[in-house]
Length: 424
Image 1 (cartoon, rainbow, N blue to C red):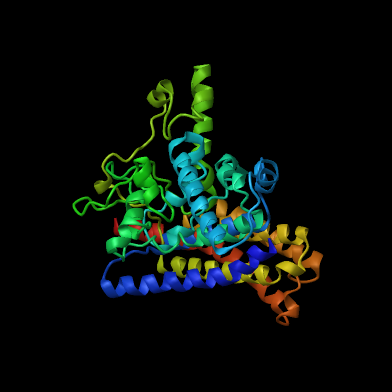
Image 2 (cartoon, rainbow, N blue to C red):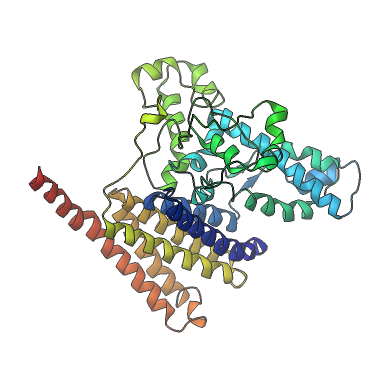
């Protein structure tokens, strides 16, 4: 985990710089690709996934190390060829795990967060799942294990393979000539994120596009059919925690409501979106049938609230960065406590972005946790050694965060509502 934390100290600034560059180029080209609340939600989602990874919150049914030890047919030494072979092997795993996530009802819950943005930009690439706690695709690694690919090579190549999927989440790059036949390009991935009927469940590949062509899931972007982004059942929230579990919650409710025992069982493993007939009739849900008339989700957001939300995100990134650079000096319990605080903070301000009253309760919990950790640690996890008096800055931020949430949720909102009534 310490190695992963160190990798993030380099990756996070890189991601932020690229997101800013995309924004500036989009303004220059006159192609709007960012919406403030959506971008904040996307980056916040990326932070939640990073925290899940840093805390080791995962259940591994069968580890790759064990598989190599048990079934390897040959013993292979590290070399350039081995790393190339590992990269291709991981891409094969990525194609099939991605495809399973799209086509099996329960498994879609592991991936819905990534498709939930109604924009398509570099920030939405950071929407990664925290609900995929159980590692279920171990069987896809069997070919690598049979070849005796060392576990340490897989561990090194896997983050590289993941980060290499960031760049093609953009609308600003058109077709890329001969590369369209070799690698996944922005054009290919725009198709994958679209909810147009022509594009649904296509282009699962992560790095090399030939997997889709080999397994019959390739679709080229059609100029006359501009992609419309999001999911068929809109999530209608900026809160990444709600998005991460809403699909599973919907399945659970349908399984409870349906009368047929068989439907209670098979609903979990049927194609994505399948619902029992009796439930569909009694509890209809809104599904987008015409993507071109879809209205994007938006909330009552003043310029002040948008600026405050950006400030909240900036403070969260700063606190995350301190966790990363201090990772080796903190105990496991301290890391868990720190992660819980950041998760509650993200829950609070993204709920405020939704104008949901639960944000106030989350802010109370955040402030209480913060004060407790400061008193327990005699400061904010040793931050005063880096910057004298920094604990007071962190405490002041927590108090201000609570006060501002009360202001936006009750005072500003009441003022806006009153103004609207006067106009009407």
